[in-house]
Length: 423
Image (cartoon, rainbow, N blue to C red; front, side):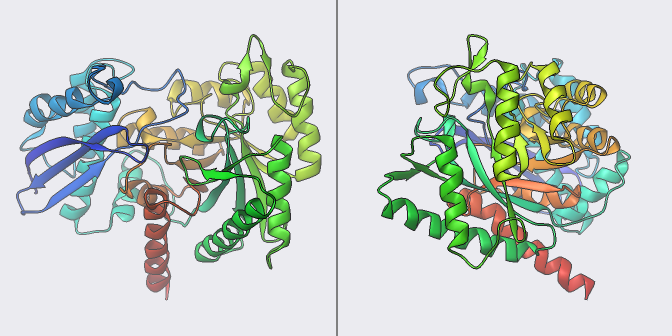
């Protein structure tokens, strides 16, 4: 039986130059594991709470020295000597020490950093790869699922809080069809991404890159973004509908103001009914495979209506609506408000809690989309996690920027390993 001998943490920077936590853990076999956690840009109001310093003299108040001290002075002494393979026991201990529903005492960032580094140590102690170990942990909480490569959802164009206030919708996706291998899907996305960049340059749509690597161009409407993606696909050897499909993350919280939805495609604000009609019409044109957060996070009746209207056509995905929270997911399942859940471990706090949420959604036949956050690190834990839980999809951003490619390239290695073991 392995034992935890030391846990410590420090403050590092994420991909947005915002402080985050890196935790380290050693076990008595002289192995050391590291884990760094992300933070969100578009944050739902029902998420577990990050612990920030709120000291305006450092990092505009976003420092995490308090969270680091919490790990070093509170969490570490409580876990020293425990077996890292007892993930459930350790996660329960973290929850017990925190004692709040939203992780506001220790902070979800402190808790997750430790929970993930424990899982990595557990994999080493068990002599197996991380994704296989995650699958083993899944079975321990009753989630019977197979290891599989997920379908990547690639962010090509960014708007909203992810872009440059140039577009209303947050993410415009291309998604390989399931018949494509993961590596073929990644190659398609890369080639389309390069072609899209050339098109934006040629059209004079001055573009930068958003926080998740997608282009943030100077376009007039959200429909313009979809059109230029479609045009770019046509310039490659791939076919829309046969090789890949489109999707959107609306992040509707950001465009919901004074009781209505305001987007540049329409001259006047739309109420909920009108906005649902807008999506139905948009779907007739672009045949969206995935529609994420189309309505604001508490519009339950509207979510039910839209899910029914688009059933058998589009997967309606909840992120801000659900925030990886079992109570909100249970309500959405009961009311049929959506058909898929975004899974972000830092919205809930521990690996075990995240696995239980996935089981809840999978038991209801919902699709699982394991996702990164806007502020990321080069840690690829989330890639192994997605494979281990048998996720249907992953969201890691564009096929660009190192913190995104760390996850995509890790999946290339996993795909090769799974292919080799099959042979």
